Length: 87
Image 1 (cartoon, rainbow, N blue to C red):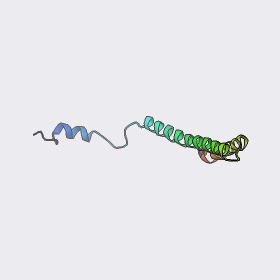
Image 2: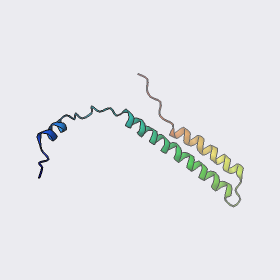
Image 3: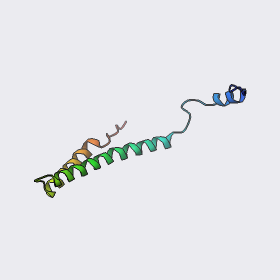
Image 4: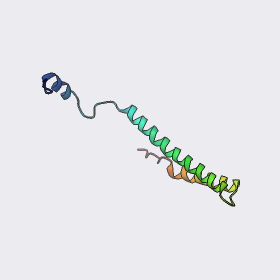
C-alpha cells in the first residue's frame, strides 16, 4: 500500500501559501450571480404583483401597471448598490 505522506506529496502541499492565488474571476462571477439574483427577484415579484392585481376580481390593467411601476421604482431604490466612499 502506498504511503500518502511521501516526500513528493508533502513538498507540493507546502508550496501553497494561503491568500496568494488570483481570485478576480471568482469575485466577478460571485458579484454577477448576486446582481442577477437580486434584480431577477425584483423583476419576478413585480411581474407577479402586476398579474395578480390585473386578474383579481375587480382588478384592472392600469391598477396592475401602477403596482408594477411602484414596485420596480421602490425596489430599485432599496436594492441599488451603496455609493463607495471616496478617500
